[in-house]
Image (cartoon, rainbow, N blue to C red; front, side, top):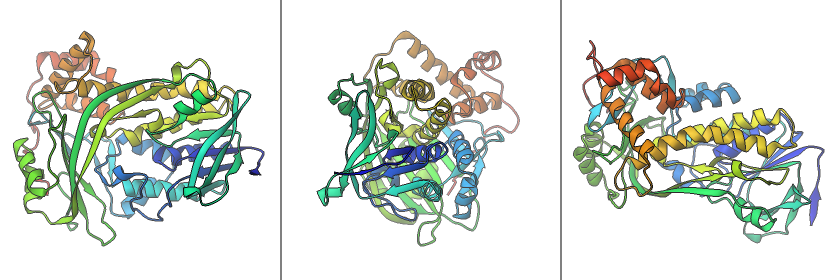
Length: 458
């Protein structure tokens, strides 16, 4: 077995968004960062086997854009140069709940609209350009090496067993291999407890397609989100995307359903579902738009969260990040943003060195995850077909959020407060501030220049 050493090397398992952003942060503290990835990585915005979900509709929340821009300056401009759109999250996007549209109003907070493939490709390009980051592809990670209470490297071999196993020694190993992470099993093998795990079985599936977008004019609406609510539990989304490899500006459309209420992968079925849920923009595009490629369907059985922060013992020199910690229902668009915020938590935890790093990081990461997890789980448990306990506080909060959405249809302050929470630029408890509670309680007053009519974005 071949051995490689360096004074201070960090190894990241998986070139996911979490893995790439972890490598970016680790590059500030380590002489060398080695990113081990099973797939061959494309040099452009293209799909790969390890991330089949990447071609589905994705949204980078405003907080995610802010954090990635902080870590990788010029990120947003680079996407705009590729044809991505930037818009105000309150004015250029529409949010529908129970068949009604929240009041659109400028908030002065920008979001970037680009495909997951383009976002990941740009992050990957900038991370690979760092002088002390090395990306090694075509790698099967066998297991981290554990001895005397710490992880001191990784055993790996060329993908498919095409070569001999090798040992890559390191000061720190970070597992960013996704929701199928083997860290719980590795911990048990080393004599530790595995983390407690929460699951919410949603049985979600969504049908998606890309359509040609007129690039000669900016759409009056660049995003239309149809939220799943108890009265209308069928989510949908329409998002403007950057041009594809052939130069065609695009829309990506998704319509979904829970617990077997799924849409067949045809444009006719997409149009029928959109008409049934009042999403006229999506229906018109599905009926008359120019389809790019095939109609796809993607299933998501359950959200899951692993509570590493509750473990009393954890090996030194080892961490897990990203979907290995929490994997969210994708209709809320939280995954990339949470990964970015975890990278900031890692940066903060590293300021005190690597000793005791796991305890500091997992505690901070749990605080990052708490808010989006509560939002997603609360939203899912508001739907009658999603199984799970509903204690009185959950029922009470869900009733309050439903009223917030109704008032937000004609109250700019409430609509803005709600959207800031959705985009993770404000904490959920901001919705319980005195000014918002008062407006929600009294039902708000219709204002001049109310929500724009539901005209077609396409």
